[in-house]
Amino acid sequence: MTPQARLFAVFGFETTHDAIRAEQVLEDASIEVTLIPTPKSLGTLCGLAARIPLEHEGGASEALEAARVAVRARIEIEDRTGA
Image 1 (spheres, helix red, strand yellow):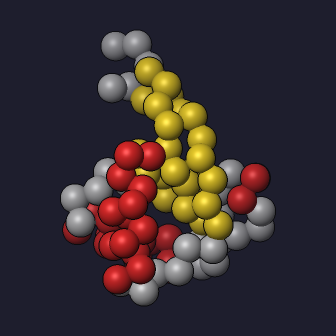
Image 2: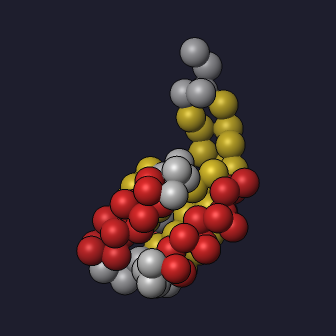
Image 3: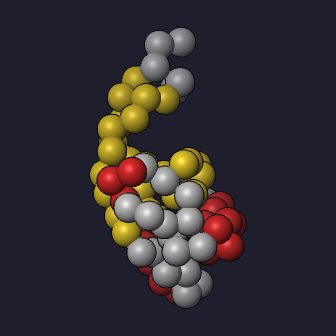
């Protein structure tokens, strides 16, 4: 299977606890999420970031806000997936 490039939103968090909590909240909301090392362009945060398909960013933001998980930074990236 050839990797394909996709656009993702990446959310950065202040603490590792917030990143892990975000992963759980997003999974519970049936939003595809992958924890990745924090990209350098997000600055000095906890070291983990949540990568979400760009088309699900709105729902992800709403779910995180409802769960009171604070997103400290956000970027868009193009990444390769096996799908």
